[in-house]
Amino acid sequence: MIKPVTWKSRFQLLTPAEIRIIHTASLKILEQTGLIMPLSRARQEQARDLGLRVEGNRLYFPPEVVETALRQAPRR
Image (cartoon, rainbow, N blue to C red; front, side, top):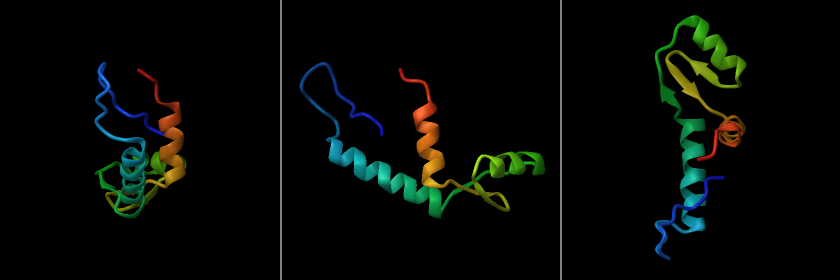
């Protein structure tokens, strides 16, 4: 889960609930709408191997794949 963005003051841009709403909506978009990304056949196979659904030039990202990628991403 993405952590809330805060400034050094007590001002907070988004509440944890708002962050969850945005995160959930983003997962839904990536899973149901996907992204258009022209790829070679080899790259399409790599995407499938990673758990993505590939239909033509559109990639669909299952929520568990996105969550795994977020957990593995370096922290700042």
